[in-house]
Length: 175
Image 1 (cartoon, rainbow, N blue to C red):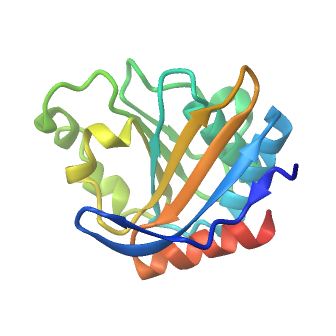
Image 2 (image 1 turned 180 degrees about the vertical axis):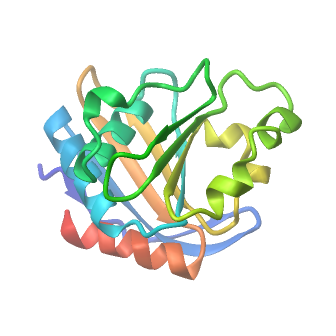
């Protein structure tokens, strides 16, 4: 079985138009690195990436793979669970990494100044994005991560606008 399965079905989400999506299966961390490299090549400054998945699914691991692909040492990328946001500025473009797991109220997220990051020349990743979905830009990439076994992950990637749908198509085309 190949690690990539293109799903040409259109999906409908509440408040979102029907959009392209695809699923990438990563049986190993090497395949997660491949996905990270594809994301790094396709994402443009100002893109927000919403990461959704259970504890231990690999949200931070995927951010590490993207960061490594843009020149940030993988070991520099850590989960921002307790600091809430990390900035990685040593690569080809800035990466901003939020973790909303511990936030209880929308104001806690808004107090972090996410709009400044969203409007920047970097890429912004938001872990546990489903907790703050109403506060994220409607123009974003969504990545849902499922753990299918101890080492395998399934990534469902979709754009939520025509611009990010094109980015999702570019990611799919290089995998």
